[in-house]
Image (cartoon, rainbow, N blue to C red; front, side):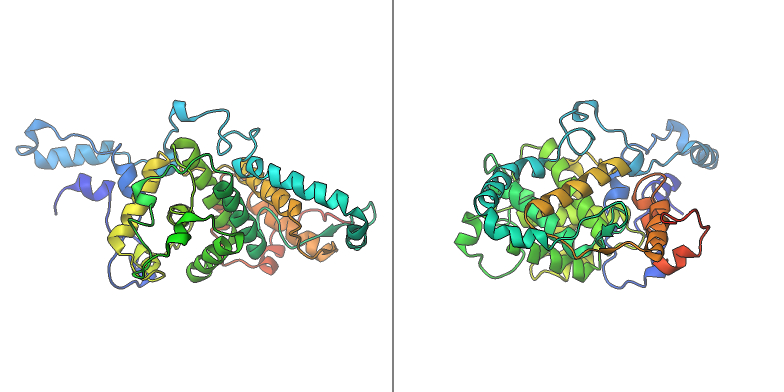
Length: 362
């Protein structure tokens, strides 16, 4: 039957394989392999003589740690790291302040022409509450993608230098077989170019908005841990690595790496596995995202969108909508934010039929 230790610590085949009905290469996430390094115990010298006894003893004492249980290194737990410290402002919001000040100055200069547009907006009062269709537990997909890609845009635009790593260099690891235009790697991409890339990937992989926020957290964690800048030559591979990690870590039915390879012309499963493995290694396998950190990034993204004039249509909050909002809020009340988000088979109407609390509006 082979080594019991190896089989228990790092299975190469998903236990849910029969449920996925996948064909072709079974490229499992590197999360399991990363966590296995701390769990394999050395076998005693007399293993060949008393193999049966040792297998039982090893099986009883073996404890497989999940990657979520990894402790963050103390030297990485910096108070200035926004992906860990709730009081520290996010990097993208800090980088965007220069442009935001220019936008506000321009709006102030042209306040007469802008006044008519501002007056058409609806504001909440004591008797009426106006809300859009985006909440922390159920973010609006398109608006979230626009905000996240805008944050990535400011990471590129306001970078300190052009420091990069070979694994993320698109000149060394191109996505397509066609030759990349030189100007593509020399000039900063526009916001719409970044949005088109991320939006296409999210639609193809059928990912929800929460994964975009977590991917941004991982990107800022990477920038904080490693001496690297997001620049024209590496931004797409960094974003892909973050999305791969987020989808594998938090989705109950993630896509195989083989499926992601189908989205690109010139990427093999081996290269996709290596990108995922290196990304995990660079963020010290720290994939944990607390509710407070997730919520901070969500509201900072809303602030960024508001500063750039990105708004969703608002509507009056009625009783039925209040019930739905409260039901979704109860889902993410305990533990990590994605613990409840995995139950995607439930609809908003199903949630209303759960145990009902007092209505928000009387």
